[in-house]
Length: 379
Ligand code: SF4
Image (cartoon, rainbow, N blue to C red; front, side, top):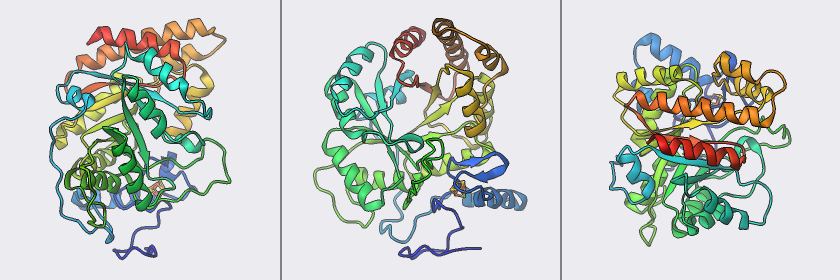
């Protein structure tokens, strides 16, 4: 059954709680159920039917709602204007570290953080309220870090901001000198247990990417109204190598690239086999966008189980087996350094596609520094 979203004069859209127009969000759970309320994800059924009919073309075309007045723009590769983009295009294996902004409004710690991590990482990426946590907006920390010598990447989600708020936010980011963003749809706050939150979604990641490219290439917003001062930033996106069916995620990445995404940051991976599955589809569909692979050491069996159960992340048995039982911080630390050093080495040996690593350590700076040091030696 189709429904019409009030205020949007476009074709009826399927009954999706996040009002996705361009395929599924990252919230498809086991059994193809929706993270919001457990219904079967409408996009999965549409994909299965399209595959049965042998017509996947609609899954690769960018769909805009009628409130986008500039509709026929086709973003192209641009000259790099940020250090990160330059390294990505040169396939130099960038090293990125993800920073969760937290709830402490004393922001001087971001100065120290950027100084501490600058010897190891080319860029710091600042998250935008992941999994429904309520944290400091990443714009101020990203500016502080950049002013202290490490180029920033700002995560921007569509959650709880309509296109007006997103346009305004992106203008502020450009005005403050942010040169890179990661545009994503945003999670439902299911992991935080915050059942009192009811997020709203106006755009999806594909339309946000397109909006960002309108702003930075044509200097107009979604309504076609001019933005003065030549805003510019590079636009990246997310990719989930654990998504099932993986082909559908790959098709969505094609849409994101057509909308203007210049690189993709992947969810964490734990084995080369995961990457090989992705590589097969990239080859089949001719995808050549630089991919920065997520590396996320886990420090407890409890956390590993959450990642596997709730997010469908594949973690090899040998890794899970190690985490079982009582292990000291030092034992887990040493295991993780060696595990991810080897994994990175093996991934780099796969050659094509991978353009860097995005390290996530949940705020463990000792682990972040040492892993960054090891990864830097590899390139
Ligand atoms: S999983 Fe995402 S795309 Fe699918 S129905 Fe739910 S919100 Fe919509």
